Image (cartoon, rainbow over all chains, first blue to last red; front, side, top):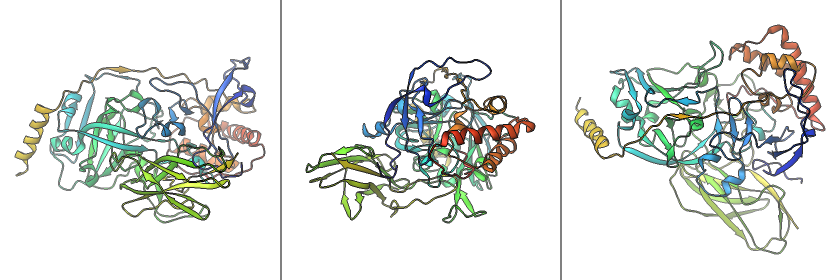
Length: 409
Length: 119
């Protein structure tokens, strides 16, 4: 297979023997390694290590790519995205920066509102749910580092394939309706969220995140309690999480416990120091460049009907399909692109500007290998997926065209 | 505050017409991390200083990086994330990680960068 390992890898699942991964239990618990077959998936990460276990299983989750057991980091296998535009809760990616409580006492849970507000409050869950109209939005939740493991040159961090994304129907109240209960100061600049996840060591930065006040007041920015019609699973932030459609999931704070209105910049670590992208394009050689917080998502598209290296039939028609997203603006079109050709794709039903949308295209006759073909999305804001990677040292906001190679039988 | 009456109406509307949301207690049990590491000199130092906070995969899945990068990543763990790492153990930890990556690498010699990524 000479094609670049694009499109989040082949996503092929294979059984390997433990000998591949020499296992030894820590602290002297010597394991007489049983020759158990373990289910592995290859993410196609350039230079490796590229294989991941599909176990252990986590509560409420089906088969997931286990990037890390503690704190949990679970990736959605690309095959799930071929099954529909809504990502089921049990296959939705999971990412925690710190440990989090595994037991939630609903009656005791409070969300505090503080900072630059007229009336600091501590609201129980029913008062949050009663704060305004119940709103549903279908929106993609995508990790800022989705696809980081495909960066070339590679960068450190969670080595995701392209499965750190999902699309769900979120139900909640508007953040602004809850904010109004406390009365937001006229000079409010940002709104910061914290959850119940806490650092393991004293003095380490808590995972708190803030968004500009104009974003916080948007019609579709929610405090959500339901995901695809079910209560938020604990692993997805029960009882409440922030939903910021069109923005990367770093802002979608889980297990929401505090809201703080800021009148100036947010100097906290995960906004001021981390989750930042270069203000202008950089190369791997650049150092000391200006950065800005990562925020809105760019358009992306994926081929889901085929994986890299799949065989196709010579002389036959070929239908390719996949999913696409516009990012923070509605998807406008998807083209299948390859060496010397472009073919416009047919878009499936529109489930909202922040949702995944199906695309498909039929090539009338396969005449040769299809080398490095990819789906290219564009949004109504005029953003088009680039054909080369906008490399950055944190591997954020990947949206290069993801390519695969298909070989005739 | 001329906005008040409108806001009150919206709030009342919410109370009267929206379905009640039931929040039940919830509890899950997460799988235990067996914290398995490939054997090698320094493995005990890694178990003693690193895997208390996070799974070994955090390190084992990284692209191949230089000794200096590993050193700087451990420094970040200590300085930023306040990891209680025994400073005397750092050379051993670095040796182990470099050794594991060398063994893992096989034909590959791709070199990565320290991303500083929070995620």
